[in-house]
Amino acid sequence: MGTEEETESENEFLLLLRCLGDCGETIGMADSDASGRAADIKGLVVKALYHGYSTLYLWRRTSVPELKVDFTDFASIQVTARALLETALILDYVFKQPGTEGDQELRHCAWRLSGMRYRIRHDPLTTEWKQKQEDERKDIKSLEDRVRSASKAIDLPEDQVKKVLKRDGWRIPVKNNRGGYDQPRWKEIAQQAGMSLKLASLQYDFLSGYSHSAYPAVFQVLQAGTEAERRSLCDGTFDGAKISLALLIRDFSLLFPEASNLLDEREPERRIVEKWLDEPAHSGSDEVT
Image 1 (spheres, rainbow, N blue to C red):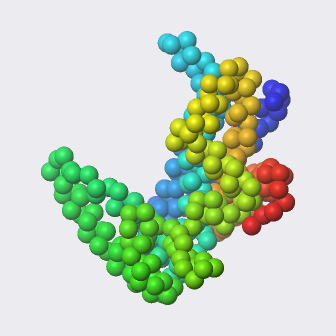
Image 2 (cartoon, rainbow, N blue to C red):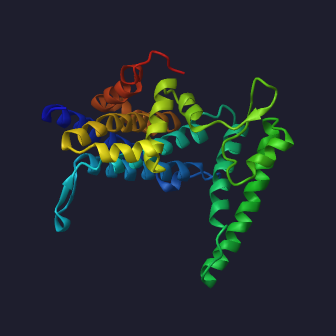
């Protein structure tokens, strides 16, 4: 990729980051409803911005003068890009996809419950944290009750409700063609968000390989001996991060009229969002789910 192309790519990324940040600013914490959804949505947007900033930083090269290090850290950019993608998919799955109030309540409460179960696994080291853990146990009990109530609204069988109440139960079981139930995988959630089968599969597997130190990722680290090779391994990931940002902006604007109005008023950002949501042009596939 030439310098002019890199500059254009970086400018697109900056516009998307700025647009997402401005969309988030349209929703104040005071707008949170009793369910806590608005506050949690805003939290996801802030988290996505952090991952976006880090992705941009890594794209611009990593420099540690004290150690005489200056290179393109293509390995770390895969990790931040995966975190950005997962944040976009959580926003879509938990808050944008549900078609009924019961489904919305179930997904939101199950997602909260799953995260809180991880927190209380550890023994508190201080009196303060012990009290906090006791308070969180009460919150967990309240969430469990809300999950059971919401499960009835969508007629989820009791054996499947038990799965939702477990630590990894935030992905709500759906009927399969064998008469049973399956929890959707990340790739399936990505397809439901509008990504093609090809991109959802290849991108998520590739990024996960770096997060989990899979052999192909380690092999690539050893093989990418030149700066040109390291840059080339960033290009697709940087474009993939733009798709994640476009998904976030799209969903946020669909959830909040104020954000939708802001996007309507900013044609350059809207065009870039539409460009990166026109995913067949970037995935090599004309199949969009």
